Image 1 (cartoon, one colour):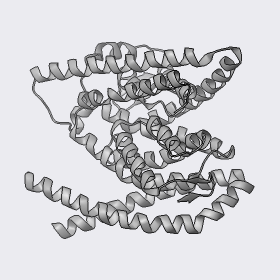
Image 2 (cartoon, helix red, strand yellow):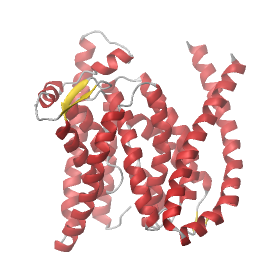
Image 3 (spheres, rainbow over the protein chains, first blue to last red):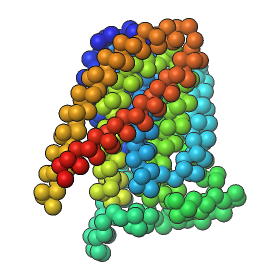
Length: 306
Length: 80
């Protein structure tokens, strides 16, 4: 089927299937899924600039569906999401500028690639260690289902460090009743800024950095981190879609078709979170940063941006 | 419990089939009626196109979710 805006011939069934898979991942883990969507669109011959912009537009739609579902379960902290969006957009802008500066200075690709591989592998290793340790210690106690009460508690073997961060009394402090914490505004902005910085460096939404940061640094329960990250993604991806559309990088028809699959996938993903406890979601999250690392390694070895 | 799961899965499978039919119809509507108009807008008025693109994807998200929720409610209502 011909999509006139990008002049690309792509099967709509293929787009729906890709959207469906990304929708499930996004709804369940709170990530945008650009590490799959970007290569999947490139694989069928869509130009790189259109793949990035169109993917962002589709992420907006998918996240709206997932957030509405998560909100119905009480898994979205709107106040936290809005504050984080500011930090993310600022980080993404600075990240993109930094890349331009480093490009002019020399061989930036190797440095950024090695740093990102190290970060991805560290996140995966850490999350695997933490979630397995938490699950083992939970087994010794009484296992509880993922009800609203236990969601806010969400045990973590890294909890002592998180509580120390929460105790840092750097004004202004912001109260987040939905998440059940009070924390310095600067820490929230810093977490969002770092996520945005990686997003600017590596493209995509960098949800595989932000979601774990929300859990381990801010101490947000996993279910809420997933829902809130998606809400934050709506804002930052909308901004990205608009700026890319102005530059002529968005084929909205492709995004609309992809989204028909993503809409149902995102609902399945969001509903599925209700059947898993926080540590189990975190353990299942482990392969995602590794996929990100594998993509960077592939890019580094072949010289092609997937 | 098993009976309940089978019921949910059957309702979900029916929903998927109905949804797929709706989506196929939707492809032709969107690509046929909106395709050329959006293409012209993208070429001539980039800022308007950017705004319309965002509205379309958000609007579709809300509509599709309502459609799937309605479908599931109808199917479950009949099955139950």
